[in-house]
Image 1: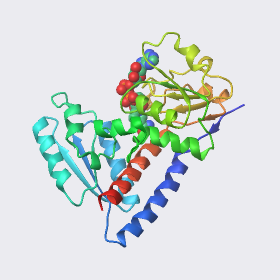
Image 2: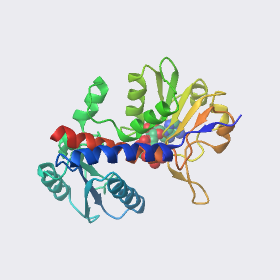
Image 3: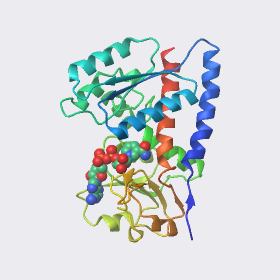
Image 4: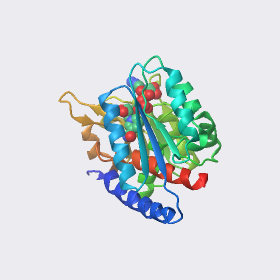
Length: 281
Ligand code: NAD
């Protein structure tokens, strides 16, 4: 058996064209969704992410602004820019590309963003709302995974769901969204005892570790759904996920890397920006 590939690129294109339609109807009412993207420093991976976000804005008919600060920028300078964007009527969503240089506290920057414009859903107020299940913005990567599951009619209800990774950006909110959909959720991390055994019980396995080839076939139940969130580079410098390619032979559904969870993340950012524009008017 070889797993069905869950095509995040195709689903992304479908969702983006729907967003464009909705943007056009908003524009008819004089509303143009606006996203500000802030980049601090010149990390090449961050530059690519920011470029892709700008491209997605164009595809969805949004207004976008890119603000680039030098790697030497201070926390005060960055927070001052965020305050200006918080007040800007043209901007509905603000995204500060992470990671930030060491002299800037990510927590302080996230807390400075107006929660109504926090389209990444990283602000503590939005994280809390996700926890209680009453939210406006969903965290982009986990939300993209949920849309992929829905597209392929995979219902987490009652299923054993295992998430590897407990970051605030991916692992924790991923677990929470699966829980909201009635999955029986286990979070694994670097100190989990006998992690392969826990993973091998999963009906739905989500890998968000950041280690190429971390999930091997022995860690996967026959017929499991495997979602690979990882974005890594292998020894040849090629982009790859956290899941070894041989897992394809054991899983029933699997997301490829690239082309699976990755494209959905940016699309969910667009969805949040559209929602922010609606809520702010
Ligand atoms: P992170 O480094 O913040 O978290 C990694 C998590 O993996 C940690 O919670 C840690 O406990 C766990 N971990 C590390 N080593 C482990 C081990 N040996 N055994 C078990 N668990 C272990 O990373 P992150 O920001 O959550 O990102 C995870 C991966 O997802 C990265 O490859 C990142 O590039 C990717 N990512 C992809 C998208 C996307 O759009 N698809 C978005 C964000 C992150």
